[in-house]
Length: 414
Image 1 (spheres, helix red, strand yellow):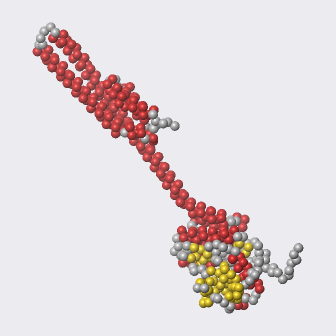
Image 2: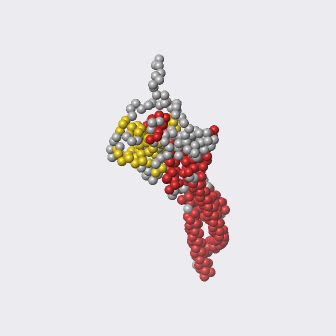
Image 3: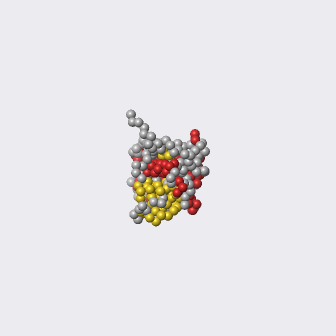
């Protein structure tokens, strides 16, 4: 067993084995800051650096030096593009013990918010970057404990973010120097809480009313508050995407409604056209039946007279009356031909009307496999049943009904 040495440090963290003494810095520029820490910008090797040390009256105080060393140890363990980079802990002539860190050319979030004029998209981008860096910091078992807009730097007009000032931060591995921390207005009632502070910052970013319930839960009492930043980020992303998803649902619903309305209108139009064709066929059929019946009676009479005339011609010459009867017969034949031409013209009209309906095109479309051919077949079969003329019935059967039946039964029914 190793015995404890009373000379060993008991600060709760590893004391730097070697503090570098450096006189290489030049062009020192003091940056106004409150509290016990002083900030100085200096140049070394052609590059600007940020030096964080103690004011002269605190440089020999071991407690404050321990705080400075603790901040260096915690910040140096964080390696992330959105966390200020800490390089070394050095004794600098005139400044004393200082943390050497990168110089960030930008503005604080407080200055950025005060400028105003930023779009909601830009503010949401900043909020998302802040959540990403906090997820990383807490994954390293580190709490910032002084999260506020003045400790967040924004560069390139808010395109990039840097989290700074880990002077009050703490980790689970440190057993001492756990002093109360935080800033009034950003600190939770029970004590420092990065999630509570984040909620206050998100409220100042004005991310939209849909994000308000997430912010309220960040600032809620400890029992109802979020416990990790990943959940906050996921919930915020959902609230930001919800209006867009709602718009997509509305557009899809409108598209489906338009299709249904178009289908209803098309079905109604098709039924009207089918009824119109059916009525036209009925009128043509009735007129044809009347003419055919009248012509039948005339033909029977003429046939009887011609037969009798032929009988007489066999025995004697044609008389003037017989010649007149023959002329009348020829005239009746001319009437029959005219009737046939009329029937042909009526058939052509029927063809044109059915062609306007587009039976062949309708039979080739998938949307009309079941609903459209059945009314057409019904009309054609009904017309055939009501037609007494064999010639017209045969025409309708050969020309329309049989092809329609063949196409209809060749369709793939599921």
